[in-house]
Length: 152
View 1 (cartoon, rainbow, N blue to C red):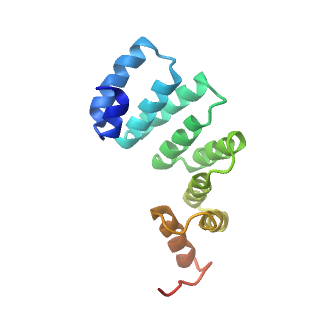
View 2 (view 1 turned 90 degrees about the vertical axis):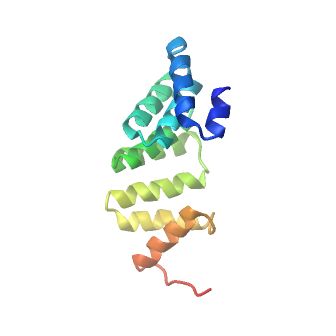
Protein backbone atom coordinates (compact mmCIF):
# COMPACT_ATOMS: atom_id res chain seq x y z
CA UNK A 1 0.00 0.00 0.00
CA UNK A 2 1.38 3.41 -0.87
CA UNK A 3 1.92 6.24 1.60
CA UNK A 4 -0.85 8.35 0.12
CA UNK A 5 -3.33 5.48 0.55
CA UNK A 6 -2.27 5.07 4.18
CA UNK A 7 -2.70 8.79 4.82
CA UNK A 8 -6.07 8.81 3.04
CA UNK A 9 -7.27 5.86 5.09
CA UNK A 10 -6.08 7.61 8.24
CA UNK A 11 -3.55 4.88 8.98
CA UNK A 12 -0.97 7.40 10.08
CA UNK A 13 1.34 5.04 11.94
CA UNK A 14 1.55 2.87 8.83
CA UNK A 15 2.23 5.96 6.72
CA UNK A 16 4.88 7.16 9.18
CA UNK A 17 6.72 3.83 8.95
CA UNK A 18 6.70 3.97 5.15
CA UNK A 19 7.83 7.61 5.17
CA UNK A 20 10.75 6.81 7.49
CA UNK A 21 11.92 4.18 5.03
CA UNK A 22 11.47 6.49 2.05
CA UNK A 23 13.31 9.36 3.74
CA UNK A 24 16.25 7.09 4.57
CA UNK A 25 16.61 6.55 0.82
CA UNK A 26 15.90 10.16 -0.20
CA UNK A 27 16.44 12.44 2.82
CA UNK A 28 16.05 15.63 0.79
CA UNK A 29 12.75 14.75 -0.85
CA UNK A 30 10.45 17.75 -0.40
CA UNK A 31 7.22 15.80 -0.80
CA UNK A 32 8.36 13.09 1.60
CA UNK A 33 9.43 15.60 4.22
CA UNK A 34 6.18 17.50 3.87
CA UNK A 35 4.08 14.34 4.13
CA UNK A 36 6.06 13.30 7.22
CA UNK A 37 5.41 16.74 8.73
CA UNK A 38 1.67 16.33 8.07
CA UNK A 39 1.72 12.82 9.47
CA UNK A 40 3.47 13.97 12.64
CA UNK A 41 1.00 16.85 12.94
CA UNK A 42 -1.94 14.44 12.87
CA UNK A 43 -0.17 12.21 15.40
CA UNK A 44 0.15 15.31 17.65
CA UNK A 45 3.94 15.15 17.54
CA UNK A 46 4.21 18.90 17.08
CA UNK A 47 7.97 19.47 17.53
CA UNK A 48 8.69 16.72 14.99
CA UNK A 49 6.07 18.10 12.60
CA UNK A 50 7.70 21.50 12.86
CA UNK A 51 11.15 20.01 12.28
CA UNK A 52 10.11 18.06 9.16
CA UNK A 53 8.28 21.08 7.73
CA UNK A 54 11.39 23.22 8.32
CA UNK A 55 13.51 20.59 6.56
CA UNK A 56 11.10 20.59 3.61
CA UNK A 57 11.28 24.38 3.50
CA UNK A 58 15.08 24.23 3.47
CA UNK A 59 14.94 21.83 0.50
CA UNK A 60 12.60 24.09 -1.49
CA UNK A 61 12.26 27.60 0.02
CA UNK A 62 10.00 28.78 -2.81
CA UNK A 63 7.34 26.15 -2.09
CA UNK A 64 4.94 27.68 0.47
CA UNK A 65 3.03 24.62 1.71
CA UNK A 66 5.78 23.70 4.18
CA UNK A 67 5.41 27.14 5.79
CA UNK A 68 1.71 26.49 6.33
CA UNK A 69 2.33 23.12 7.98
CA UNK A 70 5.19 24.53 10.03
CA UNK A 71 2.97 27.40 11.21
CA UNK A 72 0.22 25.01 12.28
CA UNK A 73 2.75 22.91 14.21
CA UNK A 74 4.01 26.09 15.86
CA UNK A 75 0.48 27.08 16.91
CA UNK A 76 0.00 23.63 18.42
CA UNK A 77 3.34 24.08 20.21
CA UNK A 78 2.23 27.52 21.44
CA UNK A 79 4.95 29.32 19.47
CA UNK A 80 2.50 31.96 18.34
CA UNK A 81 4.96 34.66 17.25
CA UNK A 82 6.92 32.25 15.07
CA UNK A 83 3.68 30.82 13.69
CA UNK A 84 2.48 34.30 12.75
CA UNK A 85 5.80 34.96 10.99
CA UNK A 86 5.45 31.69 9.05
CA UNK A 87 1.96 32.67 7.89
CA UNK A 88 3.16 36.16 6.93
CA UNK A 89 5.88 34.57 4.78
CA UNK A 90 3.37 32.11 3.33
CA UNK A 91 1.12 34.96 2.24
CA UNK A 92 4.04 36.64 0.46
CA UNK A 93 4.62 33.46 -1.56
CA UNK A 94 0.99 32.49 -2.06
CA UNK A 95 -1.57 35.19 -1.22
CA UNK A 96 -5.30 34.66 -1.11
CA UNK A 97 -5.76 31.62 1.13
CA UNK A 98 -8.55 32.47 3.61
CA UNK A 99 -7.35 29.74 5.98
CA UNK A 100 -4.13 31.67 6.41
CA UNK A 101 -6.13 34.68 7.59
CA UNK A 102 -7.79 32.49 10.22
CA UNK A 103 -4.45 30.97 11.29
CA UNK A 104 -2.94 34.42 11.61
CA UNK A 105 -5.90 35.31 13.83
CA UNK A 106 -5.20 32.28 16.03
CA UNK A 107 -1.54 33.27 16.23
CA UNK A 108 -2.39 36.83 17.17
CA UNK A 109 -4.87 35.62 19.77
CA UNK A 110 -2.19 33.36 21.21
CA UNK A 111 0.11 36.36 21.49
CA UNK A 112 -2.59 38.24 23.39
CA UNK A 113 -3.15 40.71 20.56
CA UNK A 114 -6.96 40.58 20.61
CA UNK A 115 -7.61 43.70 18.55
CA UNK A 116 -5.47 42.43 15.67
CA UNK A 117 -6.87 38.91 16.08
CA UNK A 118 -10.39 40.35 15.90
CA UNK A 119 -9.50 42.10 12.62
CA UNK A 120 -8.15 38.83 11.20
CA UNK A 121 -11.22 36.87 12.33
CA UNK A 122 -13.51 39.52 10.87
CA UNK A 123 -11.65 39.34 7.55
CA UNK A 124 -11.90 35.55 7.64
CA UNK A 125 -15.66 35.75 8.09
CA UNK A 126 -15.84 37.69 4.83
CA UNK A 127 -14.83 34.41 3.14
CA UNK A 128 -16.42 31.76 5.33
CA UNK A 129 -19.39 31.72 7.67
CA UNK A 130 -20.12 27.99 7.87
CA UNK A 131 -17.02 26.03 8.89
CA UNK A 132 -15.82 25.09 12.35
CA UNK A 133 -13.17 27.82 12.02
CA UNK A 134 -15.84 30.37 11.09
CA UNK A 135 -17.90 29.43 14.13
CA UNK A 136 -14.79 29.80 16.30
CA UNK A 137 -13.93 33.21 14.81
CA UNK A 138 -17.52 34.40 15.18
CA UNK A 139 -17.64 33.18 18.78
CA UNK A 140 -14.46 35.03 19.67
CA UNK A 141 -15.75 38.25 18.10
CA UNK A 142 -18.97 37.94 20.10
CA UNK A 143 -17.12 37.05 23.31
CA UNK A 144 -14.75 40.00 22.91
CA UNK A 145 -17.64 42.39 22.22
CA UNK A 146 -16.73 43.23 18.61
CA UNK A 147 -20.07 42.02 17.27
CA UNK A 148 -23.48 41.22 18.70
CA UNK A 149 -24.76 37.68 18.33
CA UNK A 150 -27.35 37.17 15.59
CA UNK A 151 -30.56 35.37 16.34
CA UNK A 152 -31.38 32.33 14.27
